[in-house]
Image 1 (cartoon, one colour):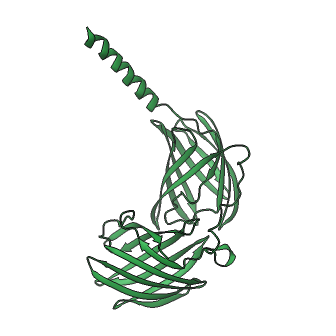
Image 2 (cartoon, rainbow, N blue to C red; image 1 turned 135 degrees about the horizontal axis):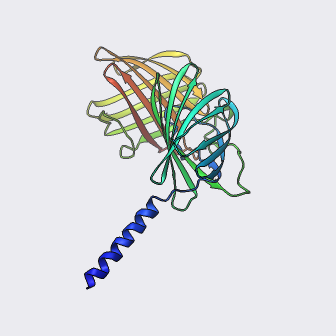
Length: 312
């Protein structure tokens, strides 16, 4: 008798829980992009972005206001979440998007052409349990390569709904024209870093002396390849310079993309040409340095995410 009572009750509870998990969220609100919490992959992110979303399922509209390296961008897009293709303009670029539900997540597949390159973007929207955080996990693919992004938006109330630029790094971490200064002693957090398919070092410390546009990096590390100590001198104006990393010649070119420094390194390893593109992102408080690297060689491509913490 007890089993007959409990079993249906458990089944009902299970069905209710399943129904709740599959419940479609409503994305209506004013959403401000948290630049510091977001990961833009190999693509420079904006200085600020605000999305005003109106969602009456299946209808969804998104009014975007953003500022960044490409200037100010404002556009409005209209979609439906029932799998029908929607065509919208993002500035001068025409984008074709198809949206569909995957459980409680909204999936947006977009195709566009930018600078004569076909680009596809698959973005998965998810809403936090308290409805205050919208996360968009996106995969971008083009002829030049692929990258992933994680965009974190925070819901604004009426007073906070403005597209004011994100705060700059703290005093003492700012270089000319509001650009960050990377000077300091940086210790690699091996546990938090992602080295992709290659083994990472056991320890690494980099000392950076940054007097824009001059940038000097001294590296001290130990790992599977033994000790590696080297020092390179860079110029953050796009000029390619030749340095030595141990007994290996490397060519480095450094340029600013928005408020991030991008270092492109070319070298030969075991007779193969290797290209490393690394984007240096400094946290707002100037205490964490994230290096997003994309490595290309005849053997294939992969990404790394290196987390450095300031020790001096």
